[in-house]
Length: 455
Image (cartoon, rainbow, N blue to C red; front, side):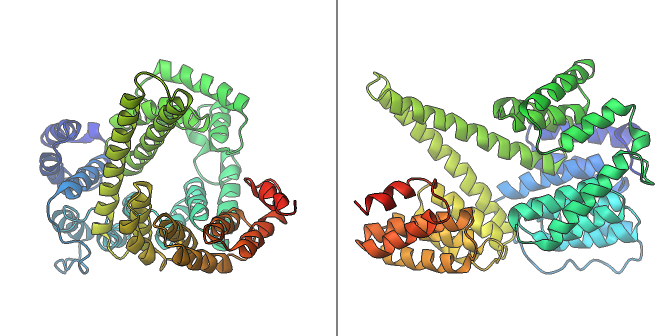
């Protein structure tokens, strides 16, 4: 049912290629004007729809004024879902491409049109705009299960657990789907997955790629095989993405970024790939800054030390500006999304803009999945502003709500101990440290602090 580029008629193919060129040149508005007619006329051309959504996202993110978060789109009462989908593209997504309201309608219409690939795209688009929206992710996982993609459902459930480790439905779903996916790969299921494999070696490679606990040696061996495939065909998107993924797992983030960028050039409409590339680029920049910091600390008397410090400060400022603007744009699109408020608060915090971070984190507390993280960062903001009584209050509240001694609890107690120390409150300072000491002797410098108090 999905139309490929080679199947487009000459008129649409010409518009499509011009649209791709406009995307490469970052001429987003022109790209939308070229690709939109193609998508409306050929609604099952998914590559076009993905490229269109990327261009719309860039366009709306840089536009001076849009009114986001309005009510449900009121289209005409057409019975044909494809006509309603065309109206959504025309009237909604150019202004709010990642909005939950419009994409939920797109999902419902896609199901009516019996086009599950478009339904998955709609839910993935919501996920792109609201990466902490676990309710949408549960719907997406169920959609993948219903249409025979347990591997994709397992990955979605795994993402939910990273946001909320206590989500038991996601935990069970991840295990069940991983088992079903494994059975399918081994040829015991009724799907056609095995038929798409050329041989058992390819199946083994895919199984290794999906494995999270590979050793360094296993990853290097698998990478060597995939590099051989890449040398035979450098335009195979799956091969390029596999190389990027392996380099990322091996900690070679600069190589990973190079191949993620190349994968995005092969498939410019993939919004998930675009987001992944942005995250890896952010990691590369963070690594580079850490290397610069280490160089500055190890050579404080270098003749060019002032230049290096100025360069580092400039890079930090530019990076913080970009991150904050991206976070603000997402909040403007979905002002009621508490997870996006947390992202913006975190961006402000990392830029040392603690006053600006506080109201965002206070709103983020309303999301139960990120409430503890928001409270911890809020306490740190107050501490950085030397508002130690408010910092103590926020951290004590967070500590009471975490009932198990996990990594988060230890982090909260350690921060709380430091605040007590600043306030000259020695007894509660030691009480907080001893609570960690009783559970984890090796946590930071807790043992040293506690044991020195007895001597």
